[in-house]
Length: 636
Image (cartoon, rainbow, N blue to C red; front, side, top):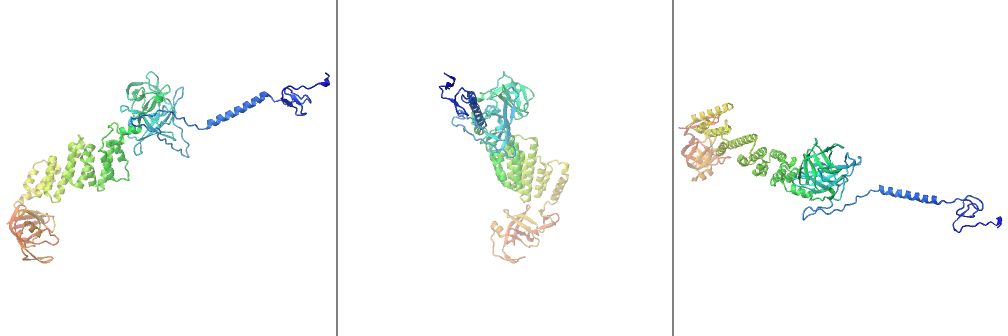
């Protein structure tokens, strides 16, 4: 074949390269055009493949970045329902409250403790807020969160708490709803809301053959290798003492797992867990059941209600609430009772309320609230004195003395200081009772108070001398003299004793005379006489009246026959006509005068009084001392 007969033989493959210049079809393997020699742009299969690989890499990277930036919700854990009692199940989803962050302050991160271990384990630390039935925070307990949501809390700090909230940082608040509690343990283990999880170290039972590390909650990154001495197991925890000078709150770790706690001043000693691992734990008791068992329907719970009563309630309503609380039994021992519910603290509030009520004049209301049994249980002498004074003001001294005696007779042993207070108070009550009765002119009641006071306080000089004064008031100088001679008196009473002796001497000089005492300088001399040895009648001594007069009511009481008026009587109101009667006897201060004529008439403005006129007075020699207020009637 000649050269000019050269033919271009194309491969059997359908794929060709077209020359961009002459449009000649060239085999795929050609680098230059067979017709014009132009370099062909051959697509490289390797370059083609790498282009696709790069595209895929970019796409995958974008997808990964997208999903990484998306917030993910924690996958809910499947847990078996927790049984608290044979008939009741705990609520599976307690409410979780989140506090919105302030606009001007960036949200704080959860507090955490970084352990000095190779694993650099972090422990989130929060504060458990214990709230009473009124929503008031009564305790704030720092608590490390372990095992996904378990916190250990001192039992005493939880008493009275109707709601428990774990607060981590400034944003997270979650309910503490159930856990493990034993009446012999000083510490309980409690779980946050079941469907909520907080990452932290695992909870594991303590073992005595592994190294134990203590981490402080108050000093970050402070750790110390310790040993647990004198371990003693009760309930769910083993209690012991840590080596070293450790007095702060902290958490105990073994192999980066939490095994125990210390609570500083709240509870002395260390407490390590000896139950199951945290991942296997199922709570046994709910917080509301714990509250019901340890606090509900108790005296302490009623104290909480009473203490929460504010300005919307009256003083008396608040006192009634406190008094009502004492009708309930206590559920807490003295050692368990929080300081704000201890008797001393509550009684301080009650004392203040009683003082306020008495100051406002509510003495009867106060006396009506406090029974003797309440005062015995309170065993507060100051409160007893305040309530008794209110009773004296509201119902009289006799009622107050009866109240004090009923309480003191069954009151537990009192201190020397309280015994002295009670003795002085008894003396005060009896003296006031005597004086009030005396000033009211009720000498029989005054003598009754004196005799009871002398029986209760036989060595009380003040009460004894009041008996002397009562005898003198009855002009019984002989009894007054005998009483005065019974005791020895301190020098500080010399003037008083001398005065009483002079009064006795004066009465001796008045022997055989009727002694009528009246207010010095008074224009009227009142007295009381006995008519016909049966009826008491009040008279006014009147030397200007010619005859004795008695009111019509007295004549009727004596059963006297009242004739028609016969006597003409001149009075300040004009002329009257009065009937005349004869009184069989008039007795004054032991002196009896018989067959005394009297007019029956009611005095204007004084219908219950009579006049002791001259037909009676002329039977005596009269000696009047207006300055001293004494009228002496000596029989002729």
